[in-house]
Image (cartoon, rainbow over all chains, first blue to last red; front, side, top):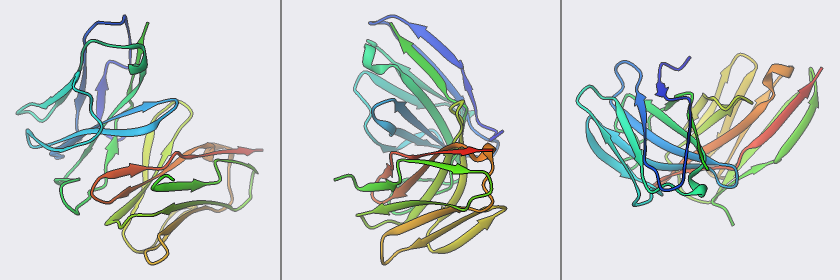
Amino acid sequence: DSGVTQTPKHLITATGQRVTLRCSPRSGDLSVYWYQQSLDQGLQFLIQYYNGEERAKGNILERFSAQQFPDLHSELNLSSLELGDSALYFCASSVGGGLAGGSYNEQFFGPGTRLTVL
Amino acid sequence: KNEVEQSPQNLTAQEGEFITINCSYSVGISALHWLQQHPGGGIVSLFMLSSGKKKHGRLIATINIQEKHSSLHITASHPRDSAVYICAVKSDKLIFGTGTRLQVFP
């Protein structure tokens, strides 16, 4: 158990809908990262927050947004869902600021949310 | 060509065999991270390296910065080692390899 929690575990929804995925980092970790893993693309970095502020951005679509709250939990919002958004969505956390510049902190992954868009 | 290449893509072994998984990259990096993804989907952090070698139990990870190459070794492999092993490198962004699927049979 990494100490990172994600809810829900599974989510089934229809095209055009909007969903929210939730992540709670390990105790003491200030950074939260979001990743998408689809069958044909492997793991893709979406976005990182550090202590409530956006720190690094990856391949995140405009239909997707995220935020980190004062209690450090994070939410990933996916809207206008398409079939191709079906994937595993992982959250990870680390102590430090992570991906900014040349730094990198070891990340610990949550169990993931499996999203199915029908 | 991908910036991070792993080999082999698939690997089958008998229990007890010595396993080597390779990761080559073409960009300058500040760190490399080996991850293990279980059949159920969960991802576990194995090693984070910026130089040299690290060992944890039966797992050993090495990195050669000059040659832009890292290896993950598993000694005395066991069926519970069956998983996908992923390397990720940190350059100006985090780039993941496509993974090596390992199956260890009794």
